[in-house]
Length: 342
Image (cartoon, rainbow, N blue to C red; front, side, top):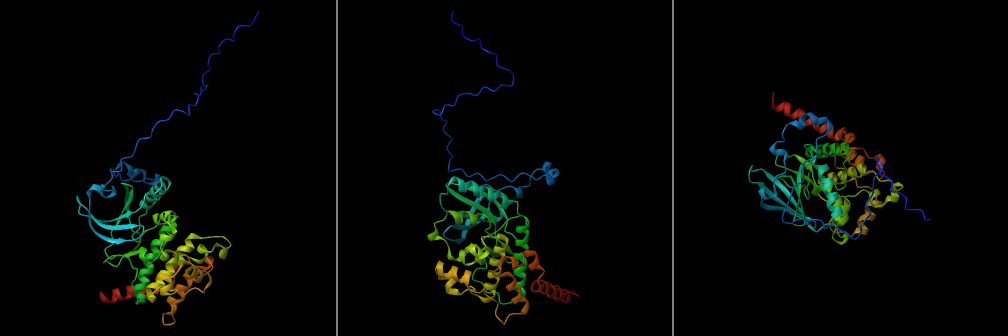
């Protein structure tokens, strides 16, 4: 006599019954309408500002709709994109809109979105404010604070007192970014902006680093490489260790020296027209550039503290703010203002 089939066991509570996978079944993802441009939401409030979360956001904290921005004129362009001066029609406020060329891969877009969310939290008077981002018709567009004086690229600053004020403002912005664990990686004269009030602010941090990884190397700017630190170009110089914060200081010092000289410190032709090999050899294997003997001892020392081949010997941003080149200029400025206002 054959045994009958085993009785079915009741399913016990808490037991999960996994359905069989059907790899042949797929659901199509909804297609994004490229004609729509949706601004990214503001980052969620931190726990320290939980009490302020109950208050409704103000109009200034919201990203303006792209359709409300009127392009007035082009204020800059390059291989990576174009910067427009735009006006917010409802308020009349002026912004800068950076339009980045190219159809970037989804992974790059997601990375840019993450970076933008970080940059939108940056709030410092010496850092260009990022107000939001749009993904519109395949183009990435970033809404920024407008600086009516443009960049300091190509400007010579012969006055050490004014140069010390420029250096102080940039260092204050760098110190803030470094405290927030944000590294610029592309400090150079064209990324230092000024307005008619002589306020100097750092621009183009974060996103420029991502885009540099996706650009065709043949189209990359020699100018960007020109301001890289030696250990970033040749990792063997520092036993493979790269301190990105110290790299920002090298780029900063080279930019300040360029303002004083009115030319690229390693040579004008090398910086503007030189080939990559000659430029990298000059940065990695020649002695660091120095301020001329006609400059003050304080300025010569200040530049030397920035342009050390050994990154461990470079002063950081906070230390440079205490350098006599900066502090003496502040003392002179306060003395002159007090004497003019008895």
